[in-house]
Length: 131
Image 1 (cartoon, one colour):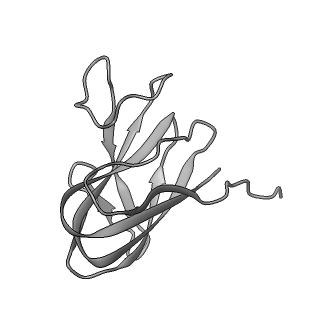
Image 2: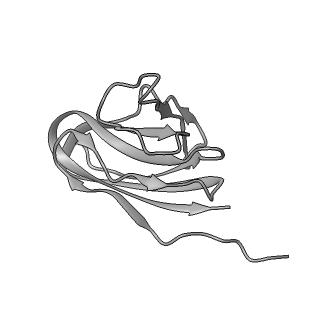
Image 3: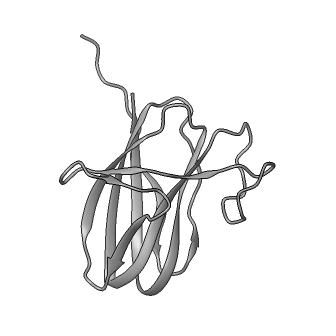
């Protein structure tokens, strides 16, 4: 039995205290992704995962279109294995939390997270890709 291959932790959002898109990573060599999310400062915000299969990374900060194609990606909560709709994202409402999610990135090329509906606090998102 071979050893499981995975990446080091990669930072997408680093204590981001504003709306907007985080760092974009290439996930084309991987099938799955673990996501570590931590909020601070009584965070009141929503995060959403965004992905694309384009050869060149789209502009995730702009509307999706036929020439800037991307989609919100479903998350699986590691606490109870529930599915979180990509369009809805994960909301934090004034109580800080640490969460773990899994993302099926099979077939995706680019991935990021975006902060929306923020009125307080900040969020850090780090990911680890694996086979």
